[in-house]
Image (cartoon, rainbow, N blue to C red; front, side, top):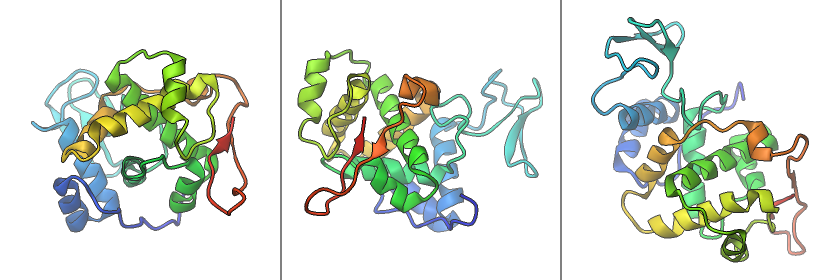
Length: 222
């Protein structure tokens, strides 16, 4: 993603994020927003919870003076070990929340660059965070009913709970003033999810589908 300029974020639900992006720019503003959400009382070490933490400018990380651990705001979250910058994660969240019938990964890929695989991974990590936040073990048949009218292809059984979680989350939060903040907090609270766990089987990454008969965007193949 080197060389890709940070695009302006779309209309924002949370005024605080809007303010930070306006003052610091998309990249620094998005990171500051996540830091405020995760550490409202000041940065604490994600390993030992110490308050004796300093910022290492040369590495753009925080360092704990007690245990020596170095970390960023994404450490230990669903965003962990991702090379996607924070502003692109938040852009994906906004688009997924605002799209009533879903926002396929091939459309996100066209906006944030990188690869289709990266965009698919981002969206499924967001869905994983939503699923963890909902803590709801609905049956597969319910998931099928919920996603049948979406802009996505008919997902395979392995991915149905994730798509159902996204649909349920959107319905639960649509029109609420804290929808964006709640989703960002879900990302920070969720446990890390590996790419292997998301795909379930090696080599099972969905492929983008060609445009539909009318030229409309479609989802991806299972």
